[in-house]
Image (cartoon, rainbow, N blue to C red; front, side):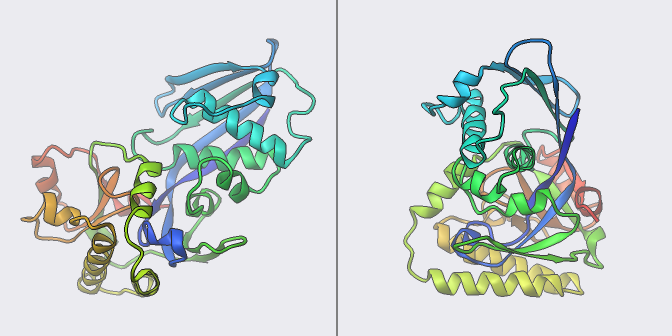
Length: 304
């Protein structure tokens, strides 16, 4: 049996602007996804995707003819997406699956698949490892995106990530603020579609893009060195205002949590998945009172 593993991810700074070359701070999560490949006594490929509780959330049979002729008519169809990934991996490495062996393939998530921690990106990373192809190239030819999530998938530490024309630049770093007990993540009870979020960003006017990139890069670097919560809050508040103007969108604290005493920052695509909030355990009750029950401490979520 072959086994691969990838960490989930959270983008702390640089959402959207990372696509245009801004330096972004991202962290791998403690929980990720497994990929198991074993011989099968059936024909073709039996694919099974299991959630964090071990329940099957997607299963299908793939024929080698389907893989070689893969066409994407509906990008939201998981089987078509899977066929696209496998076909693209074959194009990048013609030896991949060339023997057409009968296989049983199982994926197993450790996190809730609605959380936006990287169900797709961890799969891309693991398939690239299995197929022995460049993960960034596989992503570029299929899902698209900046690629920071692939860097997190294989990292044991926080990273500073910068997209460029060739291979992205990835700096291994440490992000363990002394006030981490005052940081927590709140799930907003809805999953954000990454492709839709990127399209919305791309449709915004591009005036001032270079200035935005430089300001966000500066915040990413400064945030790493932050020793006190007050300075941290000032930085994430400034980040929210900058991205809000770039998207022509009101930051989430002003929109939904204006009476909250701490600071709040969107993570990844605005409008869904997780937010980062500052405050004590007592202040977490503010979000619970509004119906947000999934609250995870920084040290519980982020890989050390």
